[in-house]
Image (tube, rainbow, N blue to C red; front, side):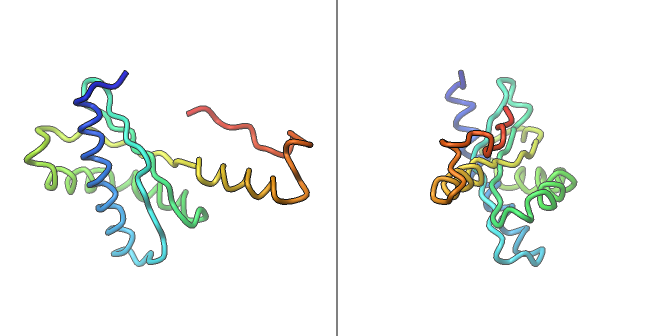
Length: 130
């Protein structure tokens, strides 16, 4: 169960991270790539924030996620500058791909097409638990 404080901090991080990552993608010459922060979970001791990002188009996902992980100290620093009046300490950031939109898209396409997973359940990937 998340506390009000965790939810509040997660909301602040989500908003600011979305702006930081979108600007970084644009400055990195990746115009046309949409990065959205779908969810942020903060641990009870407020030391770690799990950041779930959705990247469109999906084919850039792995590459961009690696970039986020390798630039984590820089992203954390930019976040610290933005949140200095709201947070004493910025949590460590862990980036994860949120593939739920892609998953839903595949299900919709399957339902519209001939390969309907309701008639043939083997067509759907087994969902990884995160």
